[in-house]
Image (cartoon, rainbow, N blue to C red; front, top):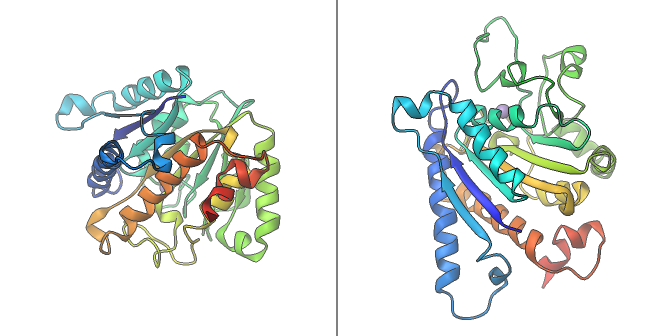
Length: 291
Ligand SMILES: [Mn+2]
């Protein structure tokens, strides 16, 4: 199986600093692969290093922005139709909308697990009704895919509004209150789908761990929640991984870039390394992380 990492640094109608974040991540993935190619001592990276392709949709001219949703959908469709594992590296979270558009109508076999501090269905009186990175689920192609949020810190939106767009939500507080119950619930939800696409908005993380995002909210989760969530989802189900809202102007050293790159490399190892058992932990690569 081929993995395709596509850099799609769209950042209009939301946080503009995230374009640089997507480009930086795209460069860092290329550097990771080049480093692996130069290494002469056998390392675990050999499991994936010749299986990863990197592509980019540049946003430099007006024409690049015209039909950006359709252009994004085409790239995503080609990759998923080819049976590839897809890293979708977007600018702000709105850059993930083509993924939601493309997965419209896949309710029986695909779930998007969205890791995000916010539920992107804001309709409050001071929010724009035009398409933005805070309301894009209201504008996604219908019927919208099944979406499960994990990690939100929402305090205003009412449950009836949320239930129109989300199959389920597990807030950061709920996750922390009873982690094993939250993971069991996520596992049950995902077991009804053949495939799962993970959609990480970097403000999912607590700002203490990940300051490089424009609209961080306190009471977030730690980066180590993600391997646990992936074990609950089941790595064999994971069809792709979107990342957005990385704003390197707010970076602390390289802490946030390193967090994302560690995660990307860990997912690659978990997808490509042979595991000795079919237990959820082993299939997510957790068993290999102790050696
Ligand atoms: Mn978001």
